Length: 230
Image 1 (cartoon, rainbow, N blue to C red):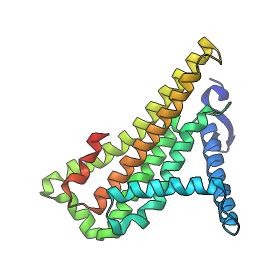
Image 2 (image 1 turned 60 degrees about the vertical axis):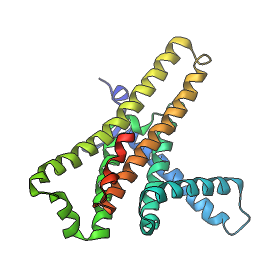
Image 3 (image 1 turned 30 degrees about the vertical axis):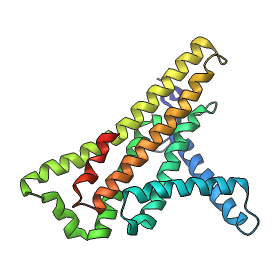
Image 4 (image 1 turned 135 degrees about the horizontal axis):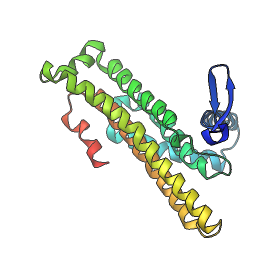
């Protein structure tokens, strides 16, 4: 199997630089450049782009405020908003020629799921302290501790595999239609790709938000059941 088939670009010693890594860094640099541009434009009249991005941020803030306690919104918002926007951009970048969505790579979705896992415990420890955060895994009985641990692991794996599987199958379906029907017929399919990419980003971000809210409100029984609605 050649490097192109594997999605490899080059080796740096034992490190492998893949298309996923390059595309991910390009997305991050794009966000950093956009943030710098918006910071510089604050000194002048607001632009249409800035107004649009502020509207998106307000919408995300409203979604966060509906799930987490009011006092934790300003702490949770930066992480959740960044995660939401990154996953959405990563899902949509596959529509560009010669590029593939980083989220079709299991290593990328696993890294995102790991960030959600770590952030969940970080917010929980910050809100309740280490002892109280760990103590709720032994409630109502210490016998349930192994099941709580398994639940934490399995939901993290499910978070990674769900996004990876959906984006991989979506890109493969689009590629097959392009090969069979050409570049003019599958325009509705490309629109479906956009809709599905938005939905998958929303689900990933909402699940992350629910997990964080569950850590912030470990005594709230309904906070862990909202995942079933997704």
